[in-house]
Length: 283
Image (cartoon, rainbow, N blue to C red; front, side, top):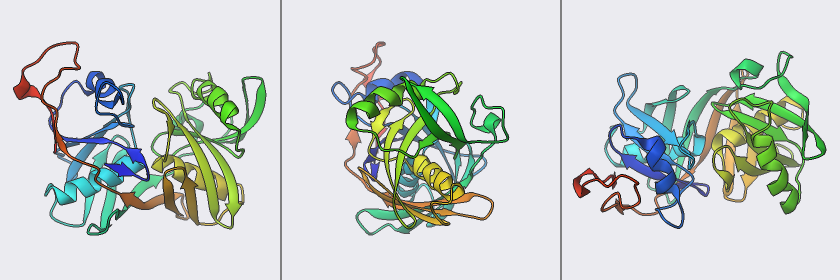
């Protein structure tokens, strides 16, 4: 499935060694290929549980993935209603499949409240928040707006050329300021309540879209006075809409779409051979 070009393998399954399996599954030449693996699981706290793994095997939160899993859960009968709750790494999120019949479908998800405290990101910054801090990387001094929308984001209101994007983004991702690394959102204000972004995602590299990143860019722009409470965020993969509440509670609205489904016949790409009956089903 994909949400605005952010593509995922969606697996209905049980607990496995997903941190070890995700890199092989997400390999675009030797595996299926994707920006991450979404695992739909039963939940004791909500209607369904989502676990998301990056191509490097790290577990994370994901707004585009949450929209995809919401559509998956509704269409596969894991839930009975269009509005339901999903347990995620950062808590329980309310979701609504607003137009499942459309292609792509339109899905709204509640991301929770943006966190600005440095310890919540986390970022090594002494202030009450890390919006507008100085960051040095690759011989450049940049102004960074750092916050969490379920996962760590660093928003920089600058649009570098391709060479600078690829040179600076990994340096910022692994910067000593970020003990758990960070996603990098390069952003430009293109009109009233409109942003354009280019994304370097933590544990992935460049991606066409990022839902939590779009929300982070919208909050940073809102706090800097560039945008109001409803922000349209455009990336290479498409357009997402972010609604910012008075307490920085966030809603994300955007597309979710099926690409294909099937089965992996065996763990041929695994270091440890296993029987075909242990193969994951991508259905």
